Image (tube, one colour):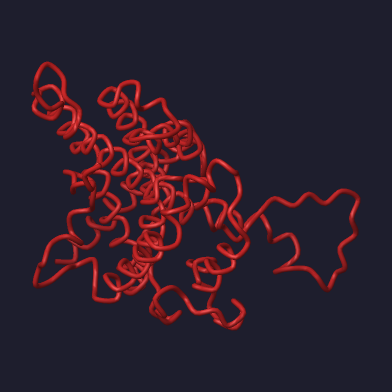
Length: 318
């Protein structure tokens, strides 16, 4: 079988361009992307489908994943709290930013098999039934658990949006390479106008979602470095809705391109078949679309009034 060819809309645009300046990415970010991509291609991709089918990732693989620092990609303030583990690519804790977390989510999702990626996670569900926990084992302030959970919603939604966009690109990649080989009515599938139109429509969904993600990351980082507070809850919720709707539509269109191959757990449509079953967890995870749209409108309605008043106040002083 011929090696897979690069596909339109299967990679984010900015990292592909050799621009003299980049508002978003620095050498640090490119080094991290190369590190994560090499790790995924070398240690995860060759076995991902096998682990997906078994429903388990080998212990030594999980151990390596954690030793490389992927378990603390949203780093704590003190490296000692992470057991002295270095972050991926050896990036210092103080230099880790939102872009670094997004790059890790993006490159891990490029695997296309969500099971192994989620199976590598450093968290799990533990049920305590009639268990007394010693006071000295309390983590954080008493009754502070809910606030801690709430503080993670925006990063979680940002990560889910990132993975949804990448999984959309994975589907496009597999569908495009299938269309290059499959013949119908005496010519390659990709030569049919209707098929090219499908890829164009998918690109018109993926690239705006990517641009919104990049813009939001820029806002988050600029807000943190400048000290200017920006409320991102509504924007993050809207991004998650946009990216998961994109994934749902892309899965549907790629199924149409692959036909019956999209329903086989082996062969060229295997990843698409798996993603089509995983898509629901991205739509629901971190808050369902119904909750996200309500939050987005409420937050923006409040914030646009605040921003308008602030601009009016600034202009009156000029």
